[in-house]
Image (cartoon, rainbow over all chains, first blue to last red; front, side):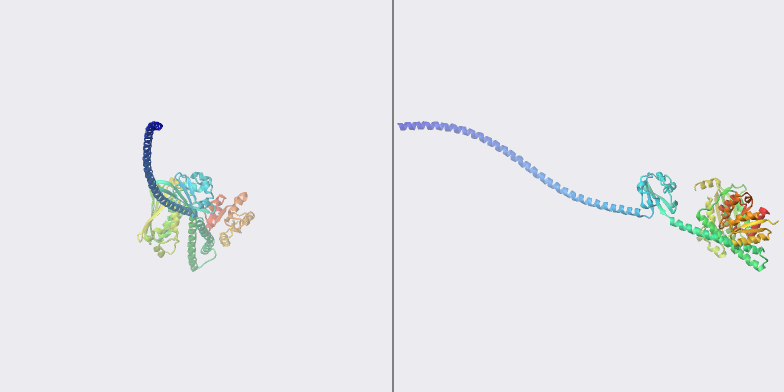
Length: 449
Length: 122
């Protein structure tokens, strides 16, 4: 019994236990269900996350690829840029080299250079210009041309070219003692646009000095020669006049020839002196209002004998109405006309015709002398006004002659503001013309100096 | 009475020639070889006319004339200038200083001297 009871109790206990276990199991199952749900949820979440991650990773990968590609491209661009940069660098170096070269040329040029911009302000001067004007570039660069007058050494240049820097070609200016410059101005153009003006200064001091020395030499030599020549002239004259005692016919003949030779020498010396005075630029002397007809007449009268001797027909054509007076240096004008008339007489064969005429043409007086002489060979016509030049045909026919006459004449006419020209045909004759401006024009001409 | 002429000139041959020519013409001639001597002599001789060279040692012709201007008596004596160069500038200066006439050495002969002298003093 006990046993059974025990057993029963044991059975009851097991049932209870089972029930409890079943209940517990039921609870556990619920719990597990929940857990599972939870886990599933979690898995889902994780899956979700994983998915996201993958997308991200894919994206990331794509991004990396992109970046890599871009980096590559960048590298390529960089290389290309480097290449370009190198080219630019090369070009820059070349440009710099060019610039240095140009600057070196400008700096070492023996000529002075001044560059003015379009507003006529100095933008550059080279070292030689600094030396010429004794100024420093920094003191003048950026200044207006007119402001430069304050530098006494630059003032003559400013006066010459004016505020607008006018065109000048090889004009001389004296800057100071022992410095003569030859100035040329060149406009700098880019197509139609003016960029400025270039002023070039060339030192001609030495040339001027040599020229002056030559002129002085001739001048001194000529003066020194005049005194003994005068003594010879006077002595011969007195011998001829019988002042120093009686002479025979034969002696007289010789002395007369010597006298004429001496006169030629005096003429040559006088012509040389005229040339040196022309070259020294102190030739014209006090022009006064003069009736040119009387000057021409005076010259013609002085040749009367020669014209008669050569049996030349001389005609002097002049207008009925009196010509206006012109400003002349009478001595010089006489010499100019005399040279032309003397040539016409000298180079015309006996019996020929010489026609001198005076006309009033517009505001000028025109003089001409026409001959029926030997003419000037065509190939030599260009050199006719050159000093010491004589035509080949006249040298053969007449050894006497200095070749200075027409040079002097041209200078005299031009110093009066006139022009001289000629027409000539060998074997037919020559006509020389010159014009002189009537007073008003001439005064304006003089004002320019 | 002979008219008196003073020649002031340093060139010997010119002096000789002038002296000869003018003596032949009947003038009484005295000679000075430079400007200084010339001034001294014109005070002593009191010439009727002076022939005066421009370029001379010691004192030139233009200076001689300047000195003459300062002395009333000397200023009255007619002067004929003998110019070597014949340059207008020189002649102009001489005229301003009272020269009556001028001769250019290479351009005249002795006959002309006589003419110019006669024109001044007969």
